Image 1: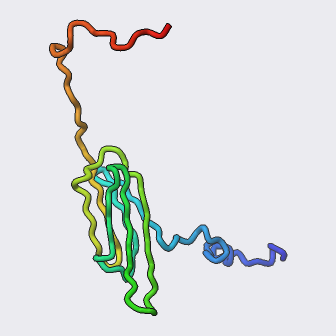
Image 2: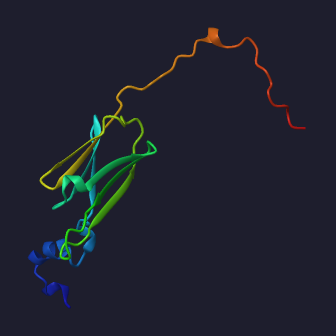
Length: 138
């Protein structure tokens, strides 16, 4: 095919076509992550999923798990399960995590801990001398 025969108006359509270039399309179970100064926000499109079928969990204080478990209600209703696991960023408030479902979009908000916890060690509480608890290897 001679490239000079192609019209210049067809080029933008050619490069934006998701059928030809599937990397431009968004995956079906894509979870969008947004970072703000106050929180981390995870959003996912879950059309047709009821609130009772959604579980948001924190595992070992390190991972955020978003999952759905659709119960099969009849032969024509397919079972569709969804599960994504994310490593939580440092300095987040695990107790303040909220989730809300509206118009088929689940929004999970993980607030940041804005203050750092520091511990003051008073030198008066330190022992006068240190003990050797393990002998040196020969």
